[in-house]
Structure formats: C-alpha cells, structure tokens
View (spheres, helix red, strand yellow):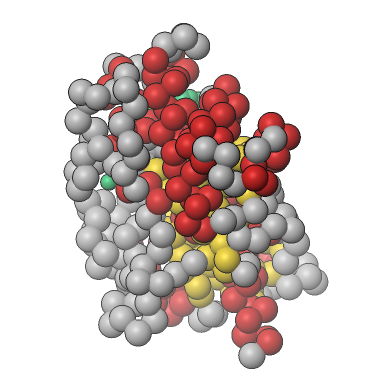
Length: 305
Ligand code: ADP
Ligand code: ZN
C-alpha cells in the first residue's frame, strides 16, 4: 500500500489509450497502455488496470480523463461527459465520464486531451508559475489549450485555436488547405498532414532552405501573434510531432515579432521572445499527466468547497 493520496488517470487518444495512477506531485506510480478500440473493449482494459491498482496501492481520490474530442463539457448540457460525433467507430455519443465514474465509484473529471496537456505543462512543465498559459499542439491536427487562473478555459465550448485563419504566405497562395470545415485555416495549412499534402513530405525530410520551413514558421508566428493579442498569456508552449523540429522555434519567434509590428513592447527583445515561445517539457507524457492533474485539481476543489 502506498500512503500518499492516489489519483487515477486515463488518456484516450486516436490510436492508443494510456492509464495510470499517480501522486499529487505528478509522479506516475504505474502506467500502461493499449490500442484504442471500441469504447467498451478499451475501457474494460483501463478499468481493470485501475481496479487492480486500487487493490495493490489503496483507494483513489479521483480519476481524470483526457480525451480526444469533440466532448460535451457544459455541465448543464444533457449530454455532459459524452463524446460528440466522431469518425472513431463506437465512440460517437458515448458516455465516457458516466461510464468511468459508475464503474470505479469515485469522482471523475473529463477534459480534452489538449486542455489536459496545457494543465500539466502549467502544473509541472514549461508553464510553471505562469498564468495565463497557452499550450498548442501541432501534430495530426492543431489544438490549443488555454489556462486561465489555473483552470482550462471553458465557455461556449473550449478554445479552437487551430481553426483560426491566417493570412496566406506569399509562397503559399495556391494550396487549398485540408481542413474539412475551413480549407485554409491553420490546421488546414500547418498541421502535419497539411505539410505532407502540400509538399509530399514532412519537415523532417525537407532541407532547411525549402520554402516549407518559412511557410510553417510564418503561420505559427501568426498564430502566436493572434494568441498574444487576444489572450495575453505569459508564455506559449508548443508540443506535438511537427514541433519536434526544434529549428522551427527561432523562425516562429521572428515571425511573431514581425506580425506584432513592435506593438507589444514586452516582446521586442530576442531574449523576451525566446522565453515566451517555448517547447513543451512533458512530452510524450503530457496527456496522461494532464489527466492526473485534472483528478488532483478536482479533488482539491471538492475539499475547498
Ligand atoms: P497526434 O497529433 O496524432 O497525437 P503527433 O503529434 O505525433 O500525433 O503528430 C503526427 C503528425 O506530426 C504527422 O502528420 C507527422 O507527419 C508529423 N510529425 C511527427 N513527428 C515528426 C517529426 N519528428 N518531424 C516532423 N513532423 C513530424
Ligand atoms: Zn479548420
């Protein structure tokens, strides 16, 4: 038995589902994964792991779930805690929160995988001690999680920074973009699959002088400028597969300064912008740590209430 308070965490991803138990300090005590199949089969494995963890280590104070979307996160909505319509077989309309809560018998809390990663980066990673913080993942899609006063921002829904529409780069006037909703929004122009659709290769396969790099840095620099002007965070954190290309960071910072046009004095110096646009620190564990952080945060709220 472990004596520290323990929390459960589940991260359902497009291809794999990760489950873990951990402490209030963000230490994962046990962590396993399985492929994401239909919800019943996938959760059976995750919940069996958590039941077993309780037998070995003691009771859980709560469980956090970080999931791919879309999710109904408004507690007043009749479908609160359910998935929205998704192409993943069996998941559309599935009551993820209710199923986990019902089968484990402890309080569960659900948020998007991106918001959860943002929360984890703020608690334990590149956003420590800063608020607001914005986390952006550039991978199969582009998603943004916004942390304000230590909580992921929810309103009408959650922020959808990846679908903002940038001004087109002059070397990229012909590509239509691949977002099924908007064509040439950021996700349609600058996600991993968009880069491959435009250039027939990912950035890792293209030489540094290839226009793909300038185009990518410009679009993400525009995103940073829009985030800065609308949310005024203390830091923007980038994660996701595409951002493994660390050579993108300096050009993104330069394009951010270009698009701000000297208007935001706090970002005029190279040092300031280097400290403002930074790589994520918790990858590849940001999602599962975010689920853990959701559980901890929710248990603290219940105690304070
Ligand atoms: P997901 O978004 O599905 O969770 P990733 O964040 O790994 O997964 O993003 C996958 C996308 O990122 C793919 O389109 C791939 O082309 C691109 N990608 C993954 N790794 C790299 C890399 N090291 N360099 C450049 N692009 C990458
Ligand atoms: Zn879009």
